[in-house]
Length: 226
Image (cartoon, rainbow, N blue to C red):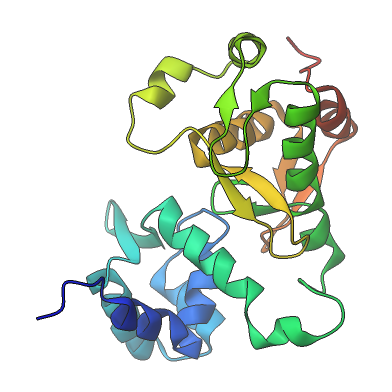
């Protein structure tokens, strides 16, 4: 019996067009109902339930219960990262201009729980330029200055180091074809910007709108409200 990871099963789950549409809807990092996902997949609720059961069985989505309601969300950042990576080799990427047609998605979007698009790439570049992080894409580390910066903007490094998720992970951006910042620090940064109102979610989209203060933060890496 082969001891290799069961890539074929995961690929078949992600490869079905209806399930792929559902997973893409969940890439905004929020939970959605089966009805919402059925509409996104263009199928009847009963058919959607069957697809969602397969995705749950395969470990790609998980159920969140709130009262009598059930919501679905992507199980982990690793699943979201695999989806983003698949977009890079999608046949649609063969056209001269890569990435999404929606300019809002190209500028800034959620990649599960972190910032992607032009804004996400710029954030990673600036962290390097300000010497807050060092190392290559596969082994990023905070500098002492970076540790002090995290504390200053309200990121609890001790809490992040207490979870199994790595602090840093570079994610190849679907539209920019350069790296943006993922990992627990990438998620914490995005959450902080959302809480501060520096970025906000666009309705019914993965796109993010960036406020003037948000644009200044991406350049200076300072929160004006601190």
